[in-house]
Each structure stands twice: as C-alpha cells, then as structure tokens.
Image 1 (tube, rainbow, N blue to C red):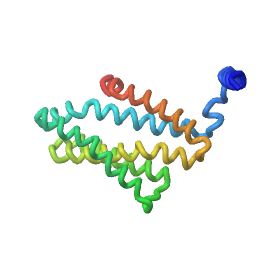
Image 2 (image 1 turned 90 degrees about the vertical axis):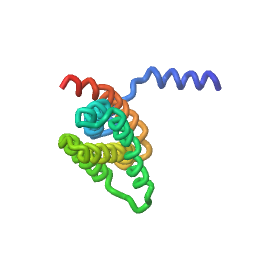
Image 3 (image 1 turned 180 degrees about the horizontal axis):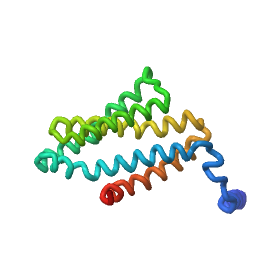
Image 4 (image 1 turned 90 degrees about the horizontal axis):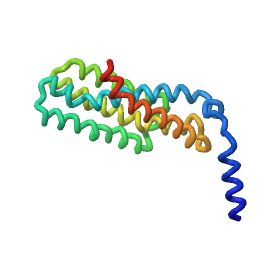
Length: 171
C-alpha cells in the first residue's frame, strides 16, 4: 500500500498538469476582473485613514470611520444567506462594482458626509465582491472544477492586492 501511494504521488508530481487557462476557458477574464478589484480595494484601504484626515477628520475619527470598512462587509454576507436572493453571478459582480464606484465618487467629493457615505458604500461593494468570486466560479465551472478555478483566481487576486498600495503610491 505504501509503495502504491508513493508511486501515485511521484507520478502526480512528475506529470505537468495542463495550464489552467486550457482546462478552464475564460478564466483569464475572471483573473482580470478580480485582480483589478483587489488592487483598487487594497489601494483604498491602505490610504483611507490618510485621506479621511486630509478631508478634515481628526485622526481618531478617521480611524473610526475606516473601521466601518469591516462592518459594512456584513450586509452583503447577510444578503447572500437569504434563499430568496438569487442574482446571476455577473449581476452580483456588477452590483458590487457599482457600489464601489459610487463609494469612490463620494470619497472624491471630500465633505464629511460624502466621505462617510463613500466608505460605507465602497466597503459594502467590497464585501459583495468577496462573495461574488466563489459564487461566479461555482456557477461557471461547476463543483468539479470550482476549486481549481477559485485557487488560481485567488492567487492572482492576492498578488494584485499586494500590489495595490504600491501602485497607489506610485500613481
């Protein structure tokens, strides 16, 4: 039994799997969508307290408002648990991005009310986007290939998330 297990493992490691883009058609589109989203999300999150202070908030108030970022991801998670909530995966992604774009627009306005609304809307959209990826992948590739597609997409998303603050600073 041990030799069989080692043989299977050795064969599995020595055989190169086909590229994910060959096995999972259209995966690069998911990579692009979620990588850009992750990069923007990280750029906003890493600069949020400084932007709020620049908008006239005291440092403690800025940190408090930025702390709402995490809390505002909860409504999307609660919405996804409702059996009556059955959007298309693409519709969910579009809706989450619309919330983020409106939130970014409000952050640009730079009044106290707009900054708070911007944080709340952007964070709610971000929370939905976090849930949209595995939902979209499962609907698109089915349960047999969803794990591979989610893993590959998540890796790309995490690399983009790491690049977000650096990219924002460079811009």
